Image 1 (cartoon, helix red, strand yellow):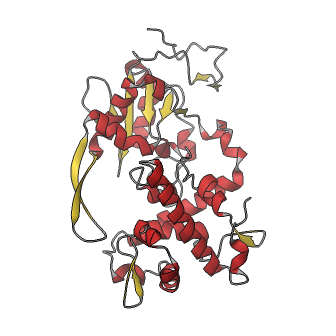
Image 2 (cartoon, rainbow, N blue to C red; image 1 turned 120 degrees about the vertical axis):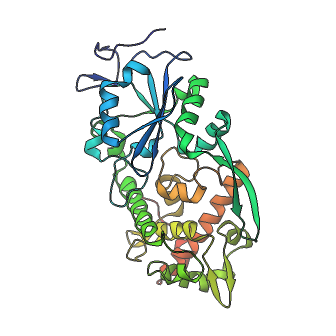
Length: 352
């Protein structure tokens, strides 16, 4: 097995940063793989070959990575959303941008996409049966990942499929990630939408649903629009967003997360329509580039909410297309309602 000693630099390696080698000549099938997952509220869970899963605090993990990790693994696999800089109201992000600058000196970090976690858990046998309530009433049983074992699921899958693992994006510190500077408008909008959704989620954590959801201050504008446009929405759109109506008001109990995600794509946190040069944002731009709904690799809170963290809409081409159509329809309806001057001008929206 051929490995690179991390304190002996290879001049041909394209990722040598501040004297630290990030890639190296890694082995493939016989690599020692570590699987990592963030277990809220305070533990980074680590799975190593032949060892029980163990947890470290976020600060202890940074030290372990720089000083100990290379002794026990050749490559680390850690979901990409957890390795984005933490901001206000972040829920999935562990470290600040300054903290992420410290993730150098250890083994290279490959970042699988979170949408694959269900597939990884099924492969590793780390699934549990869960009863899920249906919008039409009753429950059905589904198999979901056993969350405390996610790091083991990632490790087993990455170990078994080195060719897939090698295609996962390499982590580089934010200051060295040139991709962060190539689409500043898109990324700023993505962050703003995610921040808005996370702030709302903080407010509705203790809300049980039913009428309570509509009483939330930030939900009222969206609920009022839905009351007006409900009859204009297609049957399929209502089904995707689990929208029902009783006595003239729309019930958001089941679909509030998805509905409010689309609302945040159309309106900012102050309920102002998102505009570009005076016209609503293009729906294709919002869906494909900003949210990455059309199977883009870039993760975001909005994408995760709409796809059910990879279990809905991305499971097949047909289901993905159905979700895309429903999101586009509701987004268009929200934008048309917000564009008081001339709703017909937003048929195609405006790309930037």
